Image 1 (cartoon, each protein chain N blue to C red):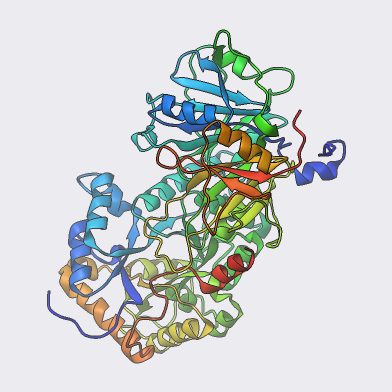
Image 2 (cartoon, each protein chain N blue to C red; image 1 turned 60 degrees about the vertical axis):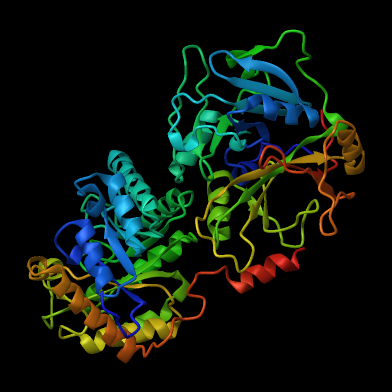
Length: 295
Length: 308
């Protein structure tokens, strides 16, 4: 993918935060070992643990996943329960403080962070449901994980990606008649653009797809099925999408590791994409054909 | 509770009309046959058992929450005043969310500290709307007839249009329209999907010229639709909104000192008579409108299906 230049003012307008992809995705669960097993089947390797909290870092290729089982200090409504949920997404930005200010000026809710001594204070805003969006700017010359995490001895710190897997995006479930609200939210705060309806990826084409201003990942917004009375209107991140240059090869490699895929008459693995079977009460991974070469 | 006849489901009461405790107000509304309630923040904050218990009482009442009021003097401020109002707005939004209120009512600013630059007002309302998105709340912006810059729905509409946020729309209030003598024909220029709430009240005087007179009348001498001297206009307003395609709620916002000192059941009964007049005689409703269950729109469904 060609790098968007940041030398022209026009690029700044299109990408006000200098967004540059996903730094990590964080799951919250009270059963970190169980989710860790699922992640390892998906090709992730545990590489580090947090200095002060029950938090683990998994990695493959360019993707970092944080499993947070730390219960202390959280509001009871977001204390981890057994079913893992996507609790946070960390976004790479040019300048985290500036990005945070930009978002607050346009109507984001700040999240008070609880930082221990000598830990990084990563600015965060409220996202969908109980989730958070972090802004991270130290991802090139320096790793945030070097500060807050201790490497697990003997493991490879930069395990290669299985079958070229990389972040493709996230799927967000939204309430009835909320498509325009969330589209505007992501456009106003981050500079996301809606793709035309005929442009779709993978095998689950519902809803609307928003493209990040850095063009490195996508958000897919999905409303309830037509005709369903949406009683509670729960909204959340539903799953992550992993890009694979060759979906069939990725499916083969993952099957060999014990991953099962949804295979039905409506929905089955193909060259465009695939969907893993739900584990631990709701954890799924979607594979999407994506040519992006992974460094 | 006796069996009621007559269809009044388009209409609800504001808690501001009744005195007494929150449970007593909700009970009086339910007993009068209403199915929805417009809450105010002090219903929750002033509840002796606390906000959490107030939320429980509202949910247990079975009444649908029409909306939550009221955020005042939000737009047009700068510096620390703006930051302060954002904090207040966030508290209001959190309470609205707690009682499952689908919208927060925001009244146009009366503050002399606020700018009169329409674009700045629009920018602030857009920010308020974005604050409300993660909570799933819509913002209804209402032009107070004594607002400093925005004091009619026509100018409120101008600001809402400039702000251009999907969850920001208009709150229409009959009192302010009649007080400011805004021609009802101006309603025809509105997009009915951007009218989020219609508040109805009548009053006893024919004219309220000065801002001071409007404030005094609005806060103490409103009556239910059909009880004042603007009944024909209220009926015309309701008919025009419905003809325009408005399918949202109507709520009676009746500030009245007398109603604060007579039994709740008696006031709720007056509200019911008003709702019956509007529902049965003005709108001639006999059955609920189709799609009143708030199902997802068929058009939106078709669009996403065609993408598959």
